[in-house]
Image (tube, rainbow, N blue to C red; front, side):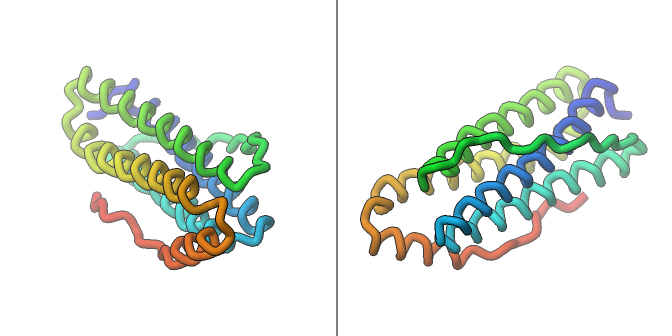
Length: 170
């Protein structure tokens, strides 16, 4: 049986993951407006991933006979004006999500909820990848973003990203 505190944190994380998807759709809109379709594609795929993270957590809770409560998703309230803004905000957000996942893991560990810890192992690894990808995007933009030809090539690189469903099996 899953600890009550762990269940509450998992439910909160579901809503946080849906917020992440919403935030990345906001970044997608920003880059569409800038004419950077590759960057827009990157964040559209990122939004799909975040939605699937929420769905995996919902399924996990439902598989364990826990009630899922969906809350209102807060509107992203960031001032985006430079092409670098979504990238920096994305890294900051991923670090925040990593902290949330770690808090759930810590609660599961304290409750000796080994099933949830095993479930969360995938998310811990995923967050490492998310932070690395966000940091790499910032580095590339710092290197190439000020040169129009290089920015064009980077935008084309990001346009090639395709959606791949999560590999976690419940």
